[in-house]
Length: 322
Image (cartoon, one colour):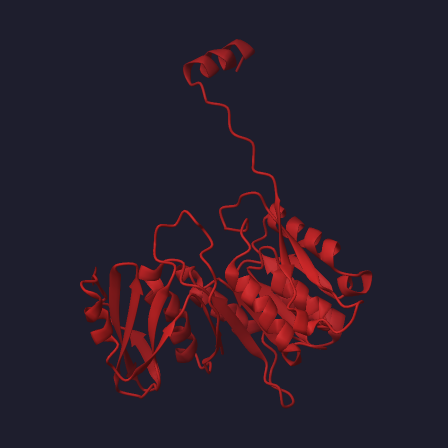
């Protein structure tokens, strides 16, 4: 095609100039003072975030901040052990584990150069040379072959697999639940010693009307043989001030899960109310498809809903360990 033809096509199908890609941003995680033991101890971690990305890598989500504090408080879960993070984005939990003497930290995300280069940048920005030597950034697609992840672990530590797997704010990817669980099953180390290898899952219900879909991750985990345990809750301010929804999500959680019983799950978001039911069969549970969403009438209606034998908690994010 000649240059003149190119010019003709350009005049026939003009395109507006594309806006420049947003610049990367920096978010700072400040360590809780109670974990700082002396003047030489680390006090903060600066996380560079990609300017924009279709996989939401441009945000330092509240779950990551909560995760970082939890890891700082529970170093026994990973100190001198192997750690793998899936969907790391800015990799804050990975960096906390590396600074607190995890034997090996492999921080992964989708194998897209901007994402992996950014994890590498944050490793260099925040870790000492010795800590960098124990930390690897790696591209990985959930559910695919884990040979390279296992090879990293084996070659660097002589152990095939990981003692702690980090999933920070991933369960809203409903189509990827099975892939995430398959990867966890393929790389988790077999139990050896008093501390059982585990997966830590921190999450927030970013779309409260789909909270029941988020929670299906844990029902699937249970049906695949994992023991599921809820370990911590934390309340954060809203991430997006322009969000017009109620910043408080009220969740009714069960006190006891009994085989063969019906469990009700009730969520309020602003003036909307969602009711779902959960049925247990043979120690496996499944969400009933019929989920009702309706407008909340007087506040007494909400109080009436709370008159059930379940504990009540105001919850903008939770962690479940399994």
